Image (cartoon, one colour):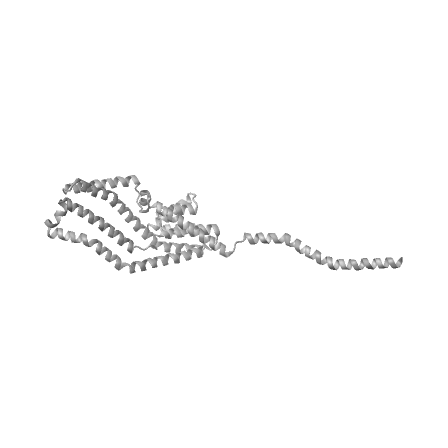
Length: 325
């Protein structure tokens, strides 16, 4: 009996030792698996939640492209309306006043041509062209000149913002400095920006209103940089510093293109004005030879055809020497 108990005790002891050695490995593996079940999904979720740098850069690039396309669409739409053009030209009149001025210009041209003894259909055509074309050309010329002045000083304004941010000033105070120190049209535009911000508008809303009166690509770049930095964070001074370099590079490229295309521009101007100059010279030297074009119906048709083809040629030459940067 004692031998049986000793054998049973030895069997239990050996079995216990074997179970501990083998079972400890199983329990440790189970423990590891259990720990992985607690920590693994969390780490996986974190890995899925944290985007890769490439994905972040690609998403930001796509966001910038979408904003640029939307800005281009708004710019094309803004150029259509007369009220937007008047605002871009810096004129305080409304669209109704503009149309009244256009009608007055057309009536004046009609009266002058009728006094000169021309036919009613010729006078009507010239009056229609003057009433619809001349005021629009003046507004477009004023808007383009105002946009050029704004773009010429905009890079310096961005540098003021960069220096102000590096020295500890908020962006709103930098806008105030630009509004006080810079001349028109840059200074008044930033003054209106500060006023809109003071009325409770967000930076994006105020910048959109500013873009309506000054639809330039440089201002759109500035708006996109501010919008992205306000959403994603980061070093705003560094981003605006890079933007300033881009703006200056664009200005340098524009000047290089202007210098390289100056010969083509001069040639286009000479070719476009040569027929008119020759006609005036012939009209002054031999009036009887040229007046037939103004008194005969066939001359009228020839003048109309010449004007049409001259307009087509000027348009083609304009497209050839115009470069979009």
